[in-house]
Length: 401
Image 1 (cartoon, rainbow, N blue to C red):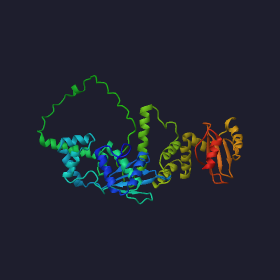
Image 2: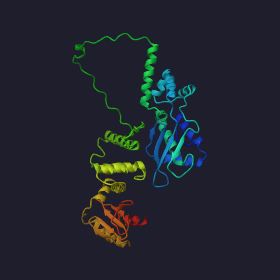
Image 3: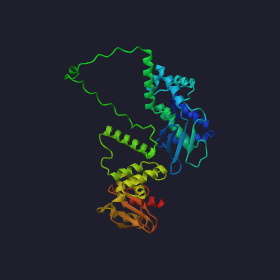
Image 4: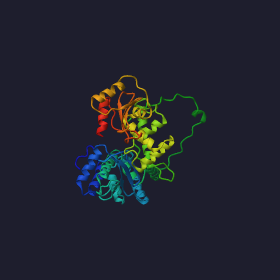
């Protein structure tokens, strides 16, 4: 691909990642589709762990695909050679502390037998889609989006190779201290300070002002525990991402965006934020956990998620709380539907229904009509379509679905 302004790498190491992807594929069309998917925002939150990169990619079908890229991790001997080389060169130390990966660092690593960047064929893609391409367009989209992560933070590549940023920096600090101790004589003992002097009252300088708020929430890129009984990694990633977004809103507006929600409403909000809700094994596990915590079933949660996606908190209220609307829009709805030669619906509270045909409109407190449908002759109503201020438009859209 020659155009990587909206997806792919802008740093040389990000471009090297993309080149490894393009060398892996024999199908330029799949790469072009993957590039378009990445540019179009079809790639969900990315979870990075040693040896693997995982996400969900929305394709042409409603259900997103679980997509994974695997890359060989470095051995302990590889890491020992790399860290010894980096600690011995102040320029390499400074580059890593600045989240930079200059050519000289990668070249020096290669000289000691450690390949940091993937060579052609090193990336091993897999995807739950039926496409047998190698890679498929969903895996290509994940690779292009990963290149953007690498542009911002090359430690993402080192994490995939097997070590977290904290582990690397701690190890480098120890090696640098040992190297400095060998190079410099020990400093003279630091003179002590009498306790009476240390405890003498004094005026401290004012605290520094708060740091500026970042333009957007951060994203966790660390590895999650994989021990028996630990929470699901993708569920942890969901909670960390949501907490970062909530904290960012608090910093920028001073208001908690979910302070007024009940625990059940917040559970519905969290579940509604998952792409392909209720279709993947990880999401089904999340649904079961959230529903069980509120003495509900997964079907109850799925129905509530559909209402939330239809109209947010108001849509959920329309699903769960019938009410008696005053005279006005509700009374004018039936004549308007009859004038448009649409089916006659029977009123009950804020609802107009035709149970035999399985269609229903519900009036919300926002004076919009929310379409619902059910299997004919049953009473199993599900939110469907988009709410409309005009009952004729809402029912027409429902009949066209």
